[in-house]
Amino acid sequence: MSAEALREKIGGNWAERADGWWLRVPADKIREAARTMLADGARFATLVARPDGAGQLRLSWHWDLKGTLLSIETMLAAGSRVPSIVDIYPGADWAEREAREYYAVTFEGRVSTPPLMLREGDAVGILLGPEGRSQ
Amino acid sequence: MSYRIPIGPYHLALEEPYKIEVECEGETVVGASLKVGFNFRGIEWLAQRKNITQAIALMERVCGICSNVHSMTFCMALERIGSIEVPERAQYVRVVTAELERLHSHFLWAGVAAELMGFQTLFMQAFRLREQVMDLLESISGNRVNYSMNRIGGVNRDIEHAGVVRAVVCDAREVVSQTLIPLFTTDRSVAARCRGVGILSRDNAIAYGAVGPVARASGVDSDLRRDNPYLAYNSLDFAVPTQTSGDVLARIVVRALEMLESCRIVEQALDQMPAGPLHVGNIYSVPAGEAVVRTEAPRGEVFYYVESNGSDIPARVKVRTPSFANIPTVATMIKGNDLADVPLIQAAIDPCYSCTDR
Image (cartoon, rainbow over all chains, first blue to last red):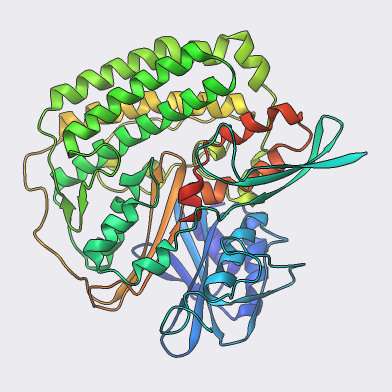
């Protein structure tokens, strides 16, 4: 399947940028999009988290299909949760664990979210707050 | 009865620490869990506290083997945000440097794999060639590991002696085509150690997000240099080797054939390289904006997300290295294999733990 056909299958208002195609969806649509991506052979590239400057987090999941970058993003209010896609894409495991360490994101549906780079018991959210740490 | 064997974080054959806990039934591996983070340096945290000139040097230290690709991709992201056009000659210089880096990285891997198989002669040959390529990179850049070739809007140094580059590439091609490939593909000892060992299926390669030679050895025909061309790759003729068996031998063959393609790319780039400036002048900040840039490193796709708020300090730098994507596949590759094959299967993904941890 082509990247264009895959975008149409997922639906929504995709925006073309110099780096690929971007779509903003509510958090509860991520799993459905991930299932469609996997069914059509898209490779999961990574998950990027960053603050939007207004107290929310921007999360974007990135896939590659034949060299085209397909990015789906959602906005997350502080303290809210987002569904995990690890059961769909096992390759998302480390990306989700790292997002938890850096921005204290909570992923629903995981059995556990053990530290990846940090040690057991370390505070999560090391890129949050003025000193880069939430607490 | 099953039992667990903790291996690492310090290994006899690896300079970098990481841990794998292998679950076995008899001599057969039935499961594994991986632990990384022993090299965690907080580079993304640091990047948000350095100006972009300092951050270029910082990014070059993400990896001690493919250092150039990190500073290059970081600069390319800033250039995309700032709509900065890189001079054509600088694009070719970046291509030559990137392919020489791929050559020395693949020679390193070939040597490590040969040594793990107990093939000392091949190890010596591979490392002899690697030294030549590293000497060449040192003669171009002045540095042996962190080349400092990249700046925003171009490169810092020119390639002044194309004949020397050609001579090294010619020697590399001869050794790869007449020694490395025949030995790796026809030697019975190599085949016995590698054929049918550590298989990663195409479906698992996609689900786990494997990249580079690991993915291509499992039948995933993907290479950003061809599929989403950047720099001067659009003007260069090269093939993307793939295999379908997904085993250790397939990864060996893919990397060996890639070395020949890198030689072709370097020679073409030297032939086509136009005269002209190397950069567009000093740039200390870019306008507010964000960009994703992906490039094909020796181990596969490097993914950079960079956000600028218009100041000289990056607002966010996200780095996803190829080993970060490839290392988790080891857990599925080693299932059903002999415990004795675990080191070779690990080595066959050409892991880099420092760049994984960042």
